[in-house]
Image (tube, rainbow, N blue to C red; front, side, top):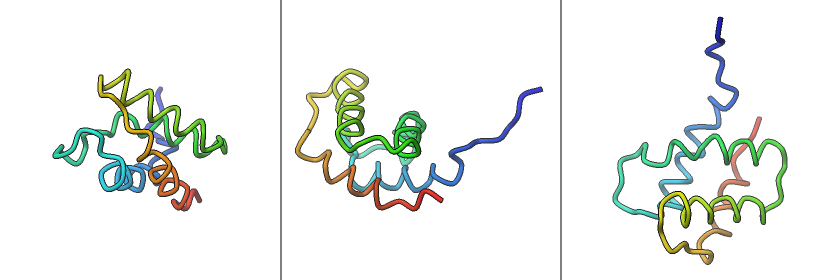
Length: 88
């Protein structure tokens, strides 16, 4: 039997908030537009990945996953906002 336990449950709304407020590479999207990217970022945060790994991950999502040109100038601010999330 599968467990319904979501190890990122408490983090999801906080990461979503950062994605919508600070990242938002598409703009003008529904609130849940970036939810499919939350788990990848949560895993990186919880394992203590360095900022460069988070920036690389989000850049890949923008360029490869979304087909956008990317915006590396914005990403350090996004990572700083993600780092400000209480992981406990």
